[in-house]
Amino acid sequence: MELTANKFKANASKALVDAQLQKALGNVQKGFIGKRQKAADALPEFDELRDNARDIKNHVLAHLDLYLEEYERKVTAAGGHVHWAETAEDARRIVLDICQKANARTVTKGKSMITEEIALNDHLAANGIEPVETDLGEYIIQLRGEHPSHIIAPAVHLNKEQVEGDFRRVHTHLAKDRDLSEPVSLLSEAREVLRQRYFAADVGITGANFLIAETGTSVIVTNEGNGDLTQTLGKVHVVVASIEKIVPTLEDTSQILRVLARSATGQDMSVYTTFSTGPKREEDPDGPDEYHVVLLDNGRSAMLGTEYQDMLRCIRCGACMNHCPVYHAVGGHAYGSVYPGPMGAVLTPSLNGIDETGQLPNASTFCGRCESVCPMRIPLPKMMRHWREREFERNLTPAVARYGLKAWAFFAKRPKLYRLAASFGMPLLSLFGGTSRRFHSLPLAGGWTRHRDLPAPEGRTFLQAWAQREALKQEPLKQEAGQ
Image 1 (cartoon, rainbow, N blue to C red):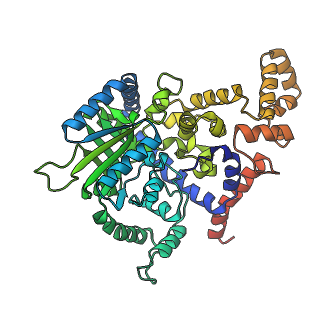
Image 2: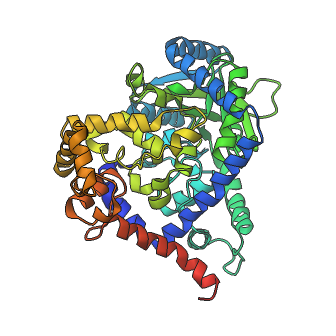
Image 3: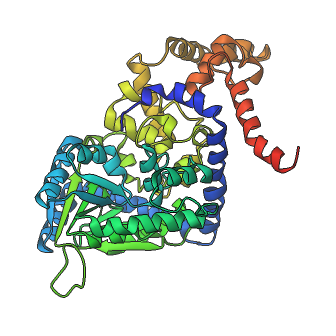
C-alpha cells in the first residue's frame, strides 16, 4: 500500500462530506462499542486479565531475543522452517521463493495485516502468482482494488448495495437474475466462489495472532473458518508474522485470548481459534507437506527500549479505532496507511518515520477512550504526544501551530497574565489554541483546530464541517420517517 499519511487532512476533508461513507461508519459505533462493554461487564475478572496480558507482553519484550530463539528451535523440531526478514523487501523475497519452489500459480490468503504492510499481494501478482483473499471482507475489497479500512473489519466502509454491485460485476458466470438482496445471499455466493479456489491453490498464506515459544505453534483467530481451509488444503503453509507476536506458553496465550475477542467483537471467544505446529505428520489425514514461518522485523526492534516500546504489546483487536471519535468521523482510508486509528497514529510513524506521517499523531482529540478500552493497556495518547513533540522539534509542525504553542506557553507559564486574559473572555488564548468555541471561526484558531484535531475542508471551519457531517448522518433517518 502506498503511504499517503501526509495527506491525512485532505483525505479527512473528503471523508467528512462523503454521504455513503458516513452512513457506513455508523455501523462501527453500533456494531462494536456496546458489544464490547457487555462482554467486559459479564466477566468480573476482565480488568485483572488485562493487567496479566500487559505483564505477559512486557516480560516477552524484555527478553524477546531469548523467546524468538526458543520459538525457532521448537518450529524446527516439529519439522517446520523459520525465515528471518529484517525488511519488507526481505519478507516478500522469502515468500516468493517459497511459492516458486512449490510451482504455485495461485495462493490463498487468510486475513493478515502484516502481508498488507509488506504489499505481498502486489509482489506475488507481479511475479505471475495470483493471490486470492479468502476472508470475506478482504475478498470484497480485493475485488474493488482497495485496501482494508479497519484491521478486523476490512470492508466496514462499504454498504450492502456496493457489495452486491461488485459481486454482479465480477461473478459474471452466475445467473444474472439471482437474488442478492440479503447479506446471507452475499455470504453464500462468496463461499461458493471461494470454495474452488481453496482446492486449486498450491500454497496457503496466513498471518498469526500469536506465536507460542513453548511449542513452536502459530495461532490464528477467525470467525469464518477461511483461515483453516487456507492452511490445511494447500501443499505448503506459510505464516507471515512480526517478531512481537511471540507469547511464552500455551497458558499465557489462553489468558490473552480471553481479552482479545471481547475487546474486538464482544464475543467470549472467536468462532475459530486454530493452533498449527509444523507440517502434517504421517498419521494426520490432512494438512500441508511444508510449514514455513517468516518472522518480520521491519523497524520493530528499533522500538525496543524507546518510549514507543509499549506499542509492541498491541494484539490488533481494533478496540481503539472502534471507540475513536476521529475514526468514526473519517474512516480508515483517510489515514493513508496500513494501520488506521489511534494504534496506527503511533505505529505508522514508528515504522515509516515522522517526516512522512506527522499528521497522524495529530489526528486525535486526546479524549483517552483508546487507552481506556485497550486490552493491553497501551498508553496511546501519551505516545501520540511524544510523536507530536518530535514533529515540533524538527519544525515539521505548521508555522501557525508552532507560534501558537509558543504564545500559549508564554501565558501558561505566567499565571497572572493567564488569569488576566481569562478575565477578558480569553479571546487572545483562543487565538492560540484555546477552547472557547466562539473563537473557532477566527483564521488563526481555525488553522490551529485543523492541525490539532480534525481537519476542516477548505473555506470552512471545523465546526461547520462537523455540522455538515452530522446533517448527512441524519438524512437516512429522515427518509425512513417520511420527512
